[in-house]
Image 1 (cartoon, rainbow, N blue to C red):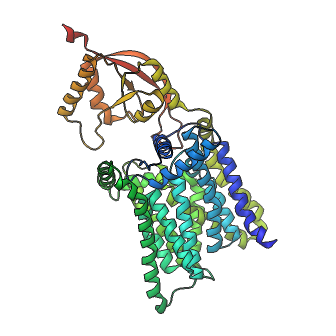
Image 2 (image 1 turned 180 degrees about the horizontal axis):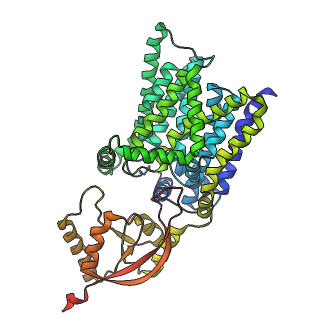
Image 3 (image 1 turned 90 degrees about the vertical axis):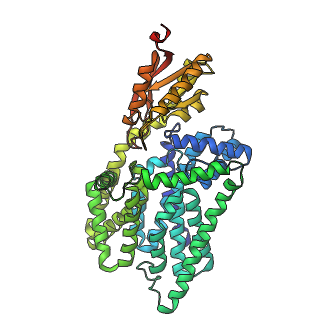
Length: 510
């Protein structure tokens, strides 16, 4: 009976988290990354050959997506977008009981319940659980790795060490940047452990063994990551993949990373405060302060877990809430610890504290709920893309911004990318070459269209837009509502996007 009760709470946490996510599952691929994942996952399933996404390829994400695509096909559901959205919901819900098991080992049952419930309802984490993305999967493998590290610290069981290494390798095969950022915090956890009865400080004699096993842990993880990337290197497209992989780190560490930027860090702190609310952040900080009294090893690990990822993600030029979710988890743990300690020190106030905690975690969730509900019932960008397909001939070329993949998938039209100045100014020779390309298409009788106010129409496209207006006449075909995802999961950004047909300047014929 006691054994059954041991698994009852994790099971309930999973079921409640999963059902809530299922009720708000995104109807379409809200984000371009989700659509790309659905496409590559379906290709992988159909061809039995691993396809890669952008950047480092994210092989395990694609493989897992292909698995869910296959499961959906068994039930005659031929919708890869819904399959990968469902995948995110499963992994997002699975993170909740897993965090419960970890925090129960670190502290106690009440802290584990409060922490896992707080994680489940974190707005950005919840939103990521409703559409196809690899963040929830990465967090699941991160938590699984932490769970087995704690198991190894407790039992010195080699199987636990092996599973810890494999889990961290799965993390790297899902989001390699997250694995690299967590290398220091996880190594510290493995070396120093936590403040718990079953986890004591290593003696001088055992430190040599710990050093060897730490090396073994990351060797297993690295080999696992390499194993998942080997298929990319053996394919005929390996040169393209290697260039893509190299550019991913080059751009991420140079053009996109600003160093320690007070402006971006302030923005990241604002995003964090919005996630928890100001009272919630204060409670999390108080929880960390309480840990400094008698759980300093645990505190040190949690602080590294917060600071190291934020030091990178929080200083990116393109920082968005989903990048910071990995650092929200230890703050949720600290919040749970603070609430449980207040109840422990003042038992008579426990009902009041639970009510206040419920308000604290529900308030930010209720703010994002309308957006999630709208995405559950509407798929604005796919709908706009299908409309473009209806308004244009099959041989048309559509000049697009970041919505290109949507146009190619839903409208079944070829696209031309707009020139932008995100990393460098648009050069005159680039514009001249682009004009020659468009003129050649028009001379061949191939119609060319452009979407104005498309995804991410910022100042980086200003030079290109002026170039189009100066060199061509624009014939208004119509406009339709579409959603721009760039402001992040919290925002429902709807605008009227206009489709124009491009024609030579009338004066050009005289």
